[in-house]
Image (spheres, rainbow, N blue to C red):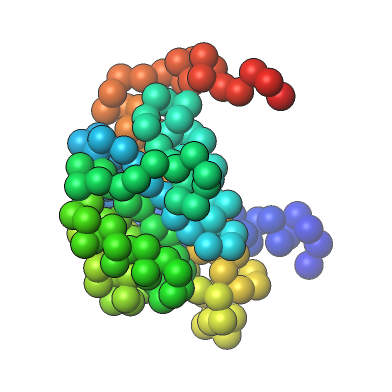
Length: 184
């Protein structure tokens, strides 16, 4: 297969996978973001890169959003929302953060392939992305290696959340350019 064929298959996998995300749970996540004082997003590895992209877009629409672990990240409080993207839902550092956020009383959103995982069970809102997680390469769900389908689906889901937030707030994309970095 050539790269165009792989691209077509990746896009088909994304379409199949994201079509299975529960709209009701996704809407709860958007509403949680709307209600939150501050938004915290965490993820490890490539899921962490998707978290950074999501936080960047939230900043562009005027939300008070942070990537967990950055030096400018403030403290999490009870009126905040903690969104954690973890394919397995068992990453120890993310599970520890989720437990801490739960003990503080923040709203927890888990975006995972495994809603019955440690992180999933701690969450108030569970977004299941039915893609293979790292180490499940023989599941037959994807031609892609490791957690690629989950990570791509995570970014697409996060972008859809931004669009839904913009829709609910009546925002147009031109409002975002005023908050775009200007020291690049």
